[in-house]
Image (cartoon, rainbow, N blue to C red; front, side):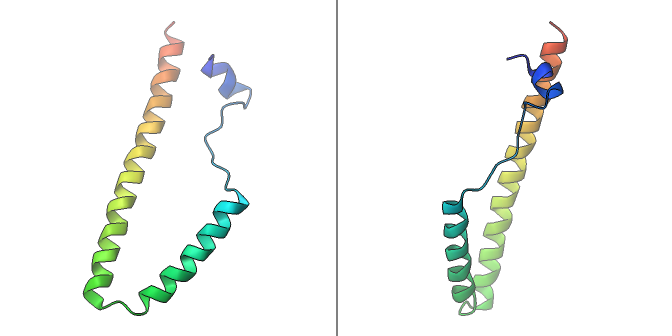
Length: 80
């Protein structure tokens, strides 16, 4: 793929579109989490927060890698 042309033409997209099915599942999950959070002990809530922080760190690193891969692909194409 000619990545530079795709970027220039606006054909290269990285955004993710959520489906109605995903959004419905997310709403259901949010309702459940809110219900369960109200019954958690403070120490369990801290453990859950730490777990969410760990997940966010992994997601952020994966997003960084995706951006780095895109940057490298652009550099490689420019050098050819």
